[in-house]
Length: 458
Image 1 (cartoon, rainbow, N blue to C red):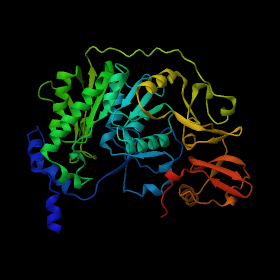
Image 2 (image 1 turned 120 degrees about the horizontal axis):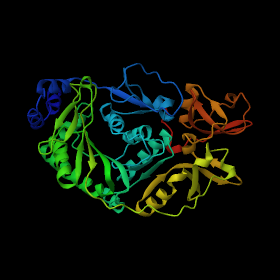
Image 3 (image 1 turned 180 degrees about the vertical axis):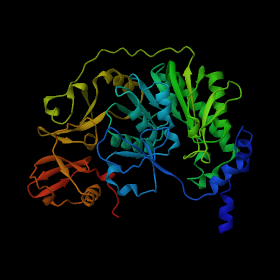
Image 4 (image 1 turned 60 degrees about the vertical axis):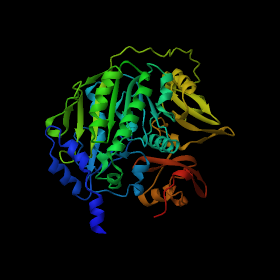
């Protein structure tokens, strides 16, 4: 049985044969690295949230907020993970941060679309590296995955984000609306063979062809939304030329795109390729050449003419009410809107964008949910607790790690923890990082951590 199991995990010969035709590809080293047990664990910290993390100088070279960990901890049992202090992300995919910097996409406010965004690694990265006044639309077609995406963006804490749940073709209704589009396309997954051995058994040349056709369909359906001169970042976790360089040539031939180069130091070990027809630069990540899994990225500018969606719409700003000013920091920077009974906030210069997107797309969430009015008071939302827009003067109940884990299990907290005698709503924190809400009463502490978020007892 052991021999059969090992045989089933051999890298597909058809894939190795095609990769071997690429200039400079080291077949023996590629196969050898896939025979090794284990893999790398990397995280990307959230620079906008307080709290110290035990990171060494072992930084991901192409991402200044990315770090390799010496071993993989149980993230579920780390309160800082639940607080959105960091995101667990594969190191190679953090290369998007370098692309943003090289292309100057951080220099001014933009409207960005992460088209295939779940579970949220690249969306949270965009939140960190784009200009703070940008608007991020994070889209996911599959409803359950859109929920996971929304939860991860809530943890990250930014209010300038809208989560949509749409087929890529829906974005045709927003011609020329998007400044920068990230398409991390569904693929055959060969770049993840080291982490997901089952993917080896599911790989075939037929699957690669199906993925290539689907990638073209996704791009053709969504690219009308990219403005003339706008930037496309296209990526996969596949090694196959059909899903990478061939797509790059197709984008230039049929979609009016022109390729862009990204300077990368040779010491990083990233392999730059050129597509056959248009010499489009592509950036390949091989685990035998660097500390990361298989990944590909190429950048493009839209050179073809593109009609532009008319964004003009009279503003009717709903400003923050006096009652909310005790809950929201820099309240004058936001406007409010309601979804059902819940009050939400979004940066006020994005009100027209919200109205447009509400008409054209199905939105899973928008901005930050502040809470629900109740008898002249506010029942604050969990989203606000984790938000960067939260007012800094809200009382804090500091917890030790065991207490924080009890809180995250939605367990009971000992009233003696409240040694300051605080009353009313307060933030449960661990190492200065916010976990959620509690309500402090004379003889008890009510735990308001969401039931659907609570961790299993361990």
